[in-house]
Image 1 (cartoon, one colour):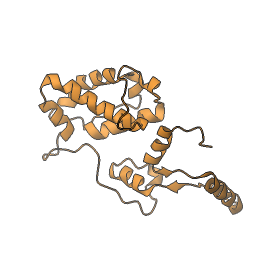
Image 2: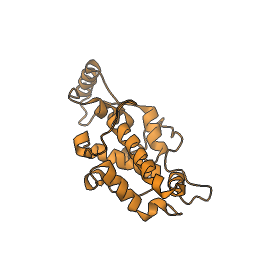
Image 3: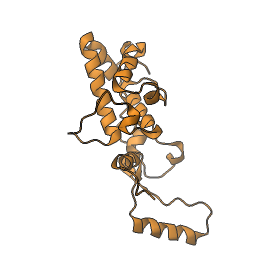
Image 4: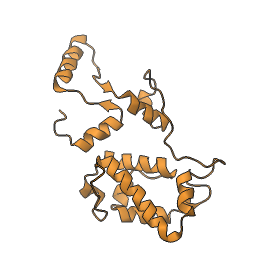
Length: 187
């Protein structure tokens, strides 16, 4: 069923807390589900560390919050300064000279795009290529939005990569957002 999935799709699934099953495991679980007579069965192997990461970022889906044994790992949300005001990353960006902000933000975006797409350290991103041409679908777009929200503290729309279709477009949009550089951040 998942034979058509790319490596990036499988990595996204893993970051979402679902571990892959081999064909024999899947068939065994399917047979076991049929034998139960239950109308709804979910054969799944949970990736508990990934679920812990999601819980630590307050991103664990509500349906899974009652799942036992999930231990939230260290928060990966936008770190706030000692006053609790602005996300640290946004303050660091604001402290940079204006001519360095674009490069720093673009670097963050490219790093997050590479992570979402499952790129290796040696793979480069063509910043002028649209997110869609890079392979983004709606799930990847939401994952990128979530990662950028965690890094910056900004509230961003789920349609971000479709509204701002390239890294330069998105960089300009974020730099134009007054909350990105404000002392109280976007949170």
